[in-house]
Length: 313
Ligand SMILES: [Zn+2]
Image (tube, rainbow, N blue to C red):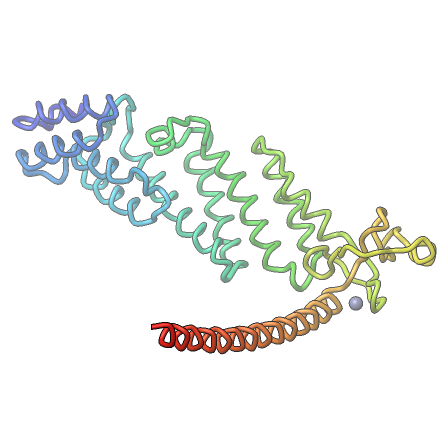
C-alpha cells in the first residue's frame, strides 16, 4: 500500500487524493506539493500525482510523458491511487513511454517529412502497443478522458492505419495507384477498429480514377492530384463527340464538367491569373487618375469659395 510511505505528510496526501476525486486539481496540486515538501521525498506517490495533474491539457506534448516516467521510476510503491483510479506503476511506465513515442511520431506525420521512415516507426510502435499492452485499456485515457475503450489493441489498429495513410501521402505524387492500395489497407485497419474508413474510401476512389484530358488528350490517374474536374459548358454536339466512360472519359456524366490534366489546368489557371492581374492593375491606375482629377476639382472649388467670401466681406 502506498499509505505506509507517508508519515507526517499522510494527512496532506489523503486530503490531496480526496481533492483529485472531486476534480479540484489545482487545490490538490498545492496540497500534494506541501506533502512532498514535508516528507522531503521526490520518490513518493504525491510526486507522481503532481506530474499527472501537470499533464492535464498537455497530452499532445511529448515532454510531459518523460517527466511522468522519471517520477514513476523513482517511485518505491508498486501501485497507487489517483482519485478513483487504481494505478499499477510498471504498466503505466510502459504506457507513458509508448505514448511519448506516439506523440513524437504523430507530430512528424503532421509535418509530412520523411513519411516513409515515420510510417516504418509507426508500425513498430503499433506492434509494441499490441505486445506490451494488448487488450488492457490505457490508464492515461481513463484518467484524463474518462475513456476505457482505448486499448493496446485499438492503438495497434489506429497506428497501423495512420502508418499506411502516411505511406499513401509519400507516394501519391509519383504513383497514385500505389497510394490507392495503401489507402485500401488503411481502411481495413480503421474498419477493424470500428470506424467507417470513409475518408480512406474516398481517396481510394479518387486516386484510382483515371481520365483523358479534354484539352491535350493525355491520360492521367489520381483525381485532385494529377487531374481535376472543372465546370464547363458542354453543348449536346460536343457531348456526343466526347465520352464519360472508363479510363478514356474526358467529361463527367452530368455534362457540366470536363476533366483536365494538372499541366493543362495549371497552365490555364496561371494564364488566367496573369490576365486578371493585368485588369486589376489597369483598373487601379484608372481609379487613381480619377481620384487625382477629383482632388484637383475640389481644390479649384475651394479656392473659388474663398475668393467669393473675401469679396462678400
Ligand atoms: Zn492536358
